[in-house]
Amino acid sequence: MSIDWVKTSAYAFALYLGITLDIFVAWLGLMILDALFGIASYTILNEFSWKKFRVGIFAKFLIVILPIAFSLLVKTAGKYSTSIGFGVDFIIFLFALGDTVSIFYHFLSIKQQERVKPKNDVILLTINFVLNKMKSLFETLTK
Image (tube, rainbow, N blue to C red; front, side, top):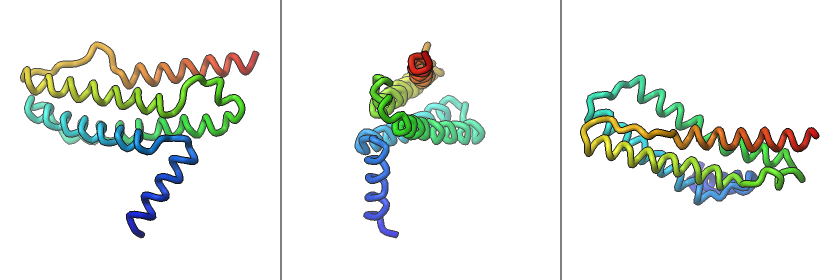
């Protein structure tokens, strides 16, 4: 199996789902940077553990699946998909924003030599936003 075959398959899958692959790849890059900054900050502050590491990597994997699941929902929605009011790329952007915010907080934690935590978790806010929009769509469709 060549790299070209994998790349072509990834583009075809993204095209089918309506995901802009460049945006998705940029978000994955931000996730990797966030993981590296997280490892650095937890190590420098003597808070690193392999359990936290495994949980963090698993959580990142699950977060990657969310836009894919949402894009499949949009595919099944057919003519109702325009009622959702936002696209998959927007959700990926919100998750990328969350990872960027996390990178800055890890950097601040390293710089200040103490854990700095955000008041709001952008990832949780994004998930709640999507859930509320889906609930609103469901209520609209079932009236």
